[in-house]
Image (cartoon, rainbow, N blue to C red; front, side):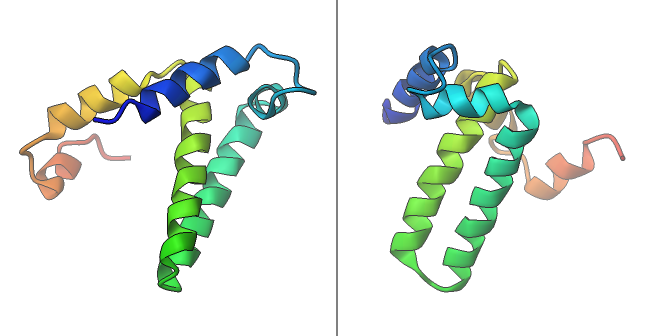
Length: 106
């Protein structure tokens, strides 16, 4: 895997404590988890819109925004990229249908 996401994770974690007037990550963090989650949702919707429009460049840009904001949210939850990758590894070779069926019912 490319180191880009791990580098981004490190940068985000460093900037969470920075001066909010100097860092977007710090400013977003200061607004709280609800605002961070809202940004993840907005970027997800924008990614879907670009995909539905077959806008490849738009989908790439919006996907980058989505990954960035998701990683800010993960940092706020003290979840590491390794935690998420471990979960994906756990699911490797398991049918998506079987994996979903194994989850507790809501």
